[in-house]
Image 1: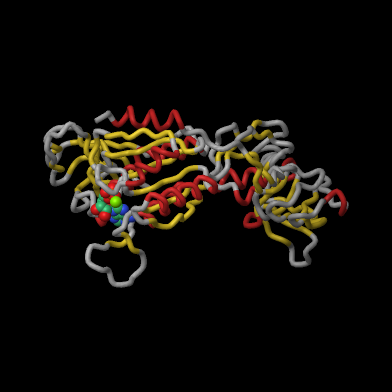
Image 2: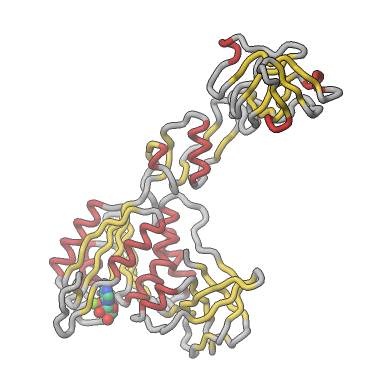
Length: 402
Ligand code: AMP
Ligand code: MG
């Protein structure tokens, strides 16, 4: 057996992502910027009002209440210079949120603090305001030439908004990965039809495709193949041609019909690892035509945990992320998490809650590698070092999922 870190480093060192591409901004959420972005313009582009109210000269409000001549209106989207709207001494202009400040005005009095005369020709301002009151200066968010985002920035919803605000319509990013998912095993069936004796349903493909979706990768469903060398080879070759990485599950253990191993050894440069962890001890990883292939174990919990520990960080790295790992927290164990010494680090499926700002975890249910319901319920994987487990009330380190 090799330590988890050694297996992980081996995998990460061999995963190289595809070259950067240009995509429309609308398709870029979750992707990583492959270039830095500088602002070509000011945001906001012009001084404007933050409130509905009246644009005034601040000096005219000294000694308020004061009554000013109401000489015009500026709506959002209107240029007061074009309409000839100006604020001279003793004047006020009705102004709507987002509208440009008319020439002459340097402050805004909010509508709630002013009263228009019944004939509509004057407004009485009830407060003294200082210059700049409720005015948003040009460039207050970004100035022309400002560095907006560095290379490596992960584009979230706010980033898309900022880029749109400076007129960016396409971005240079690391592409969304296409990752093929293949299930193997004579016993596997999908759908709802009755199972013949010895058959089970394919749980791994939907689970792995779901993990890819959560990761922001595009999962490519390569279906399920029987334990047959030719069928496995055809499916793998098809996957390699269409994807940036491949995940297979099953067929990498010590069984007589574990042909994934045989085929990958023939067509790829694979390493077969026994990692000192439970679940997910067997891991096949290698390159087929330079493309990373993860041979994940067949047991459903093992395949998901193996994805978490190896495939997820590797795929994130291939997609240009610098931050590869799930968050780790310390948590108090409720009810204990038992185990026996076996030279491995155990990853127990736990549900987490936050009590008084502190994490607390308890077992999510049956901890067998075939018991997928506990994995489904889990918020985290508690890391149990080799030994006898963690007692009730003791602290444990937890990898938070999702
Ligand atoms: P294997 O690694 O092929 O020996 O499979 C290990 C265990 O995982 C066996 O009990 C298989 O039946 C089960 N298994 C393999 N693939 C899947 C799958 N896609 N869905 C559910 N169980 C599976
Ligand atoms: Mg099998």
